[in-house]
Image (cartoon, rainbow, N blue to C red; front, side, top):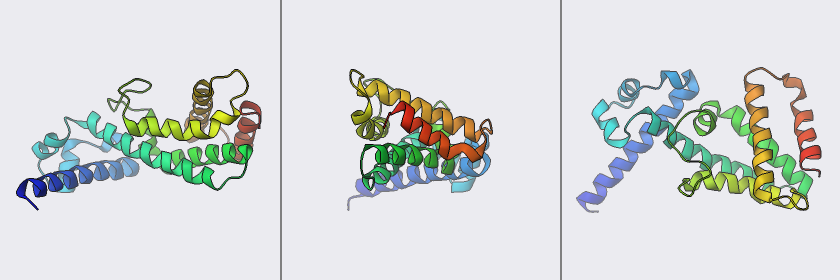
Length: 192
C-alpha cells in the first residue's frame, strides 16, 4: 500500500468516526448537543481536523442524512422482500418506514427536518436519497391506481408516513392506534 493510499484510508476512517460520533451524540442528547468542539473532544482530534473533513455542522448533518437514507432503503427493501402480495408489501413498507423513524429519531431528523445542505427532488440529489425514494416507489408503483403517476402517488404516501412519524413522535397522536393508522393508510390511500 502506498503512502497516499494509507493517508486516504485514514482520512476515510476519520470521516466515518466523525459521522458515527455525531450520530451517537445526536441520538443520545439531540442535535443541539452536536458541536464541533464536543465532536473534537469525543474523537480526540482538534477542531481544525474536523473542519478539514466538514465545513461545519450542516455538512455533518448531511453526511448523517445520507447514511440514514442508505439504511432506510435497505430496511424498506428487507421488510418488503418477505411480503407476499401488494397489500402485504405496502403494509410492510409502511411499518418499516415508521419503525425506522422511531428507532432512529436523530437520523430521521437529519434526513427530513434539519438542513443538511442536500438537494431533494432535483437532478443533483445525492444517490442515497434517490435510492431511499426508489425503495418506496418500487413497492407503491403497482398500487398507484389507473391514471395516477406512480412517482406522485409515492410522494403522497411518503408524506402521509412522514406525517404519522412526526406527529406520533411529538405526542400529537395516541400511541395505541398506530396499527389502525397503518391499516387505514394502506386500505384507503393505497386501496389494497
